[in-house]
Length: 239
Image 1 (cartoon, rainbow, N blue to C red):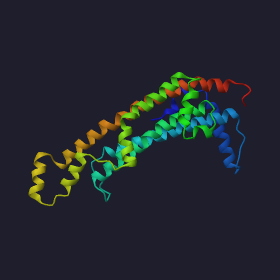
Image 2 (image 1 turned 180 degrees about the vertical axis):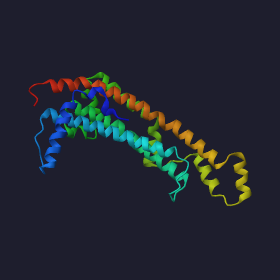
Image 3 (image 1 turned 135 degrees about the vertical axis):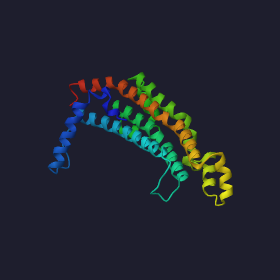
């Protein structure tokens, strides 16, 4: 997903491109610093925050890509371990999208980095953002709402125990059965491959829609912030 293509960023892109060009020229000349205008620096900081959001989405999508796999032939670890690992990876990265949405909003309204990065940063950002864009406030809340149903599971994985469920436990037991007649009893009911398919389907049904829903609200957030971008770059005294 590429939220950098959102038209809401169009007011910033000319300044962002100028900033990147100056940086590249400085780098090629082996200079440690270069002179960017306040507007260019502002545009760079916003676009960098958007890239951070897109990186978070890419990580989530990569987890989904692995969760669709049934075989990991070059790995020493079995399907159950891989599946649990990538579910955990997805859940642990999920809230980073929410946090990065708050940070792009805080940067957009020119809050100090110290405030944005503080423990109470998100609540401070939301309080200040209400003065600029109610649409942006609602978009952030909507992203948070999408994540909310998975927060409990995410916190369990982060603080209590690794991810598992009945079907994964059942699969782990079946693949470790050494007695052929006992194994056949289980596979007469459901084969290992069929059980893997069930596990994958259930996981994707739980996790995959979250990415799409969050992405829609991130798009709305950027569009809602666009007027702020236009106002900032239109101020003649800000150079």
